[in-house]
Image (cartoon, rainbow, N blue to C red):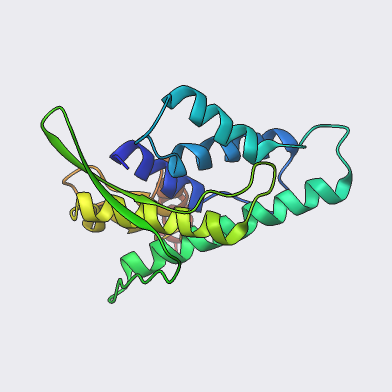
Length: 196
C-alpha cells in the first residue's frame, strides 16, 4: 500500500455513513477496493474492477431495501473498524494483532522489495465482513511495515475529530480549510462579543 492508498484509507475512515445513497455507496466501494486491492497477482485492472463489482453487487435503484440497508451496514462496520485502526495509531500504544490465518509474501520487482499480506479469498457474490476487516487491517499493517514514518503523519483534527494525513513539515491542527476557517471564525465572533 502506497501513500495514495493510505490517504484513501484515511478518507474512508472519515466517511459519513449515516444515510449513504446508492451512488455514494458506489464511491465508497471504489475507495475501499483501492485500499484493499492486492496488486501482487494477475491483471491489475480486471482484478480491481472485479473487486469494485463485488462491493457494489446488487446495488441499483431496483434493489430491495433490505439489500441496500445490509450493504450500508457492511460499509458502516468497515468504516468503524478503519477508524479504530487509526485511533490506535494516534494513541500511545499502537498494537495490532490478527488471529485469522494469512500469508506474508515478500516479492522483488524491478530491484525493489515489496511485502504483501494475503488473506483467504471469499466466495464470489458473498461478502464476509470479517474477511474484509482482516483485509483492511492487513493492508494497514503492510503500509506501516513498509514505511514506519506513516505513523507520524496520521493526525486528528482538533475541530471535527476526523483523521488526516499530514504531508507537510509544518504542524497542522485541522484536517481542512473548512475546519480551520470555522475555528478562526468562532474565535473572531468570541472576540467581537467581548468587545475586542
